[in-house]
Image 1 (cartoon, rainbow, N blue to C red):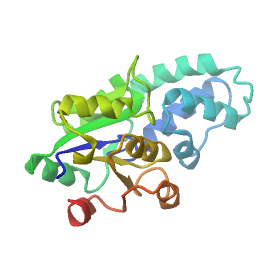
Image 2: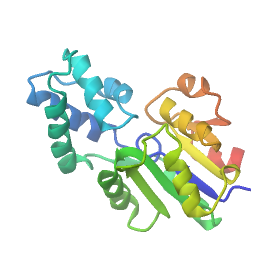
Image 3: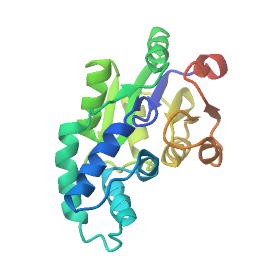
Image 4: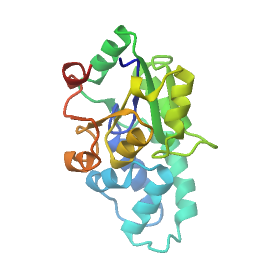
Length: 217
């Protein structure tokens, strides 16, 4: 019996690609680099903002990461201002969450986005207190795909892995859910394609949120 669900944020609950692309390009512009498109940013994200900046700089020609430390500072500043730029929930997500809550299934968010920005994204779109737990990248807790964040949420819920679903849209998420022993669901409406998700053999891969109640619950 499923009693809780843990969701990735970017590319799973919320379409944040415009905000991520906008702030990445503001950072690159600071160093005189040309902008990158959303297709590239979808490949850069998923492993936290530090890896995002590393990948973006290398793509732009800074192979030695000369601008890395300053890039982190610039990105942090611009992202604090623009992290809600055109952010919106994916179609069907609000309805799915309402159905889960109506069934008494507890819901949590686990993201590699900095914690403050994770909370801002979730509370702006869904309201404060809508999710039972919201967790972004925080000091002392290894980021995904390390299972530590998932285990911490399970401890807070007082649940075991077999009673929890994990939803995500990238290879990082598949590694996270499967590594923590959760029933793992890859979602194809996010930043990566079905082939990437299926290569990790999650229990489910779905194309639309309404499939959760039709196929899984």
